[in-house]
Amino acid sequence: MFKTDQRLRRLYNKYNRLLFDGQLPESTVLGWDTALHGDKLGQTISIEEDGNKYYIVSISTEIKKLPIIVHQTLVHEMSHIRLYPFMKHGKGKWKDEVIRVVVKGGWELW
Ligand SMILES: [Zn+2]
Picture: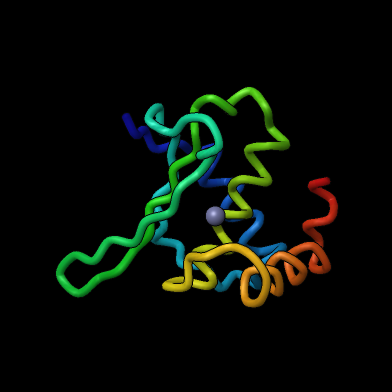
């Protein structure tokens, strides 16, 4: 089950400003999802409706009480939005994005 959340929305706005120059869309929907388990801490999907595109970022309820993991997972998903439709991890594009985020200020999350 997915449930939108204001705390995640505030964090998204904060990191959008700090790490993404405010360039990620404000229309992104953020919430907790009870269906994400194990290694799957977060998920980003893109929705197209009547010519409008927006993203839904789900964070696993399993990590709700681990703030630092929530922050890291959220920023990870935000990088997916920045690189969309490229959704892979690993060397190259993803690695460059991770380094960009860390240099920009994401190092404080570690
Ligand atoms: Zn990912």
